[in-house]
Image 1 (cartoon, rainbow, N blue to C red):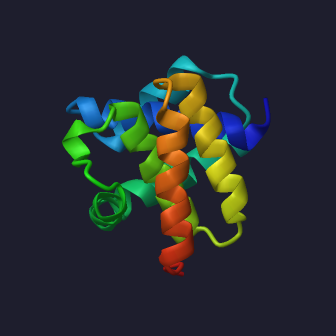
Image 2 (tube, one colour; image 1 turned 60 degrees about the horizontal axis):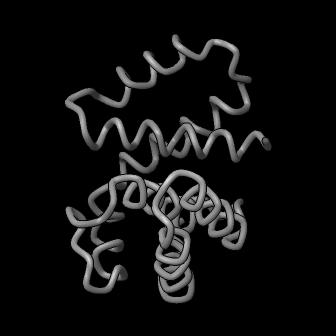
Length: 138
């Protein structure tokens, strides 16, 4: 598995935990890194970059997600899908060094791997609309 793919999977898992628990990002990261000591520094750095940025921009990311997820309220989305979309929106809008096609493809693949049957199509549709409509924030 590629390093950035692994980092995105970690980001999805930690965002999921943050979404359903009372813990802080720093607490969840500390626990995760303690439990997974063999993770390469590159993977850790990329995962933390995505996570910290996503959490920092979460209100604006959720507003964008709500705007483009036609007929879906955040609370009704599958938790995994919601958090994949959150970090992917962060990448699309705040990480210009990553090509949008890479972000979308990786996110769709993670949705197919970890979520429900139609999740890949849902994630692809939302991210494609955002990519063609919203301007990068940086």
